[in-house]
Length: 235
Ligand SMILES: Nc1ncnc2c1ncn2[C@@H]1O[C@H](COP(=O)(O)OP(=O)(O)OP(=O)(O)O)[C@@H](O)[C@H]1O
Image 1 (cartoon, rainbow, N blue to C red):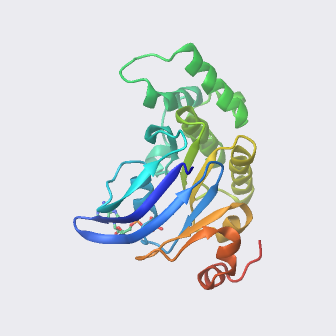
Image 2: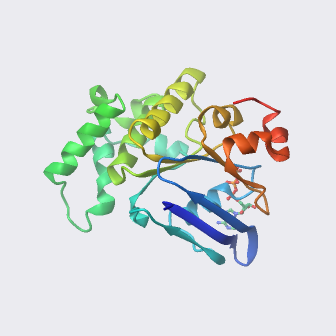
């Protein structure tokens, strides 16, 4: 059974269609790359998957034990967010807030989960540091640890390596791959980085006004659109 199913989805703003007739399904443990030109609707689709935007037509549903509020999200970072004046520990813990309702404190389990996630992402030593003083790569690790407070099942990442140097990019990609392979966390990645898609994806959703491709990476690389978009790169 799939964790996420999109059936004949149409998305848009104020009556203007951005994407239509979109069909996809994501199984537990998949690593889906969502690719497409600028303005093709990748972020709009992310919002719909996160339940922040209703489809104009069609449905996006969760299954296989995944609840809609168990999708962790790593948004594109803005300059203001990079300057956030809180400690690493505070930020990682705040990932649990999604599930705490109006309760104004963290439970023992939530505090432990935050420590475990910092350990997992190699940022335990940064716990007391101020977020805004960290490097871009460290900041992304903090936000990943935060996202893992909300879910152990599915992570949605929007261009997570933007602005990082090549070493930090590789480290972040490898960490995400580890969360996928070792912990079985399903990954949905919006990216323009086709080299990384070829290396890490299990599936590709290539969108434009009408969806151009959804399927396995191998089939994508053999398809005409895949060949054009990746420049014929081999997996
Ligand atoms: N809040 C909004 N109101 C109206 N139109 C919007 C809104 N947000 C996005 N759009 C339009 O929807 C289309 C898709 O935008 P979206 O941001 O989803 O594309 P994208 O594929 O994520 O682009 P990029 O790769 O540049 O981030 C664009 O034409 C954009 O102008």
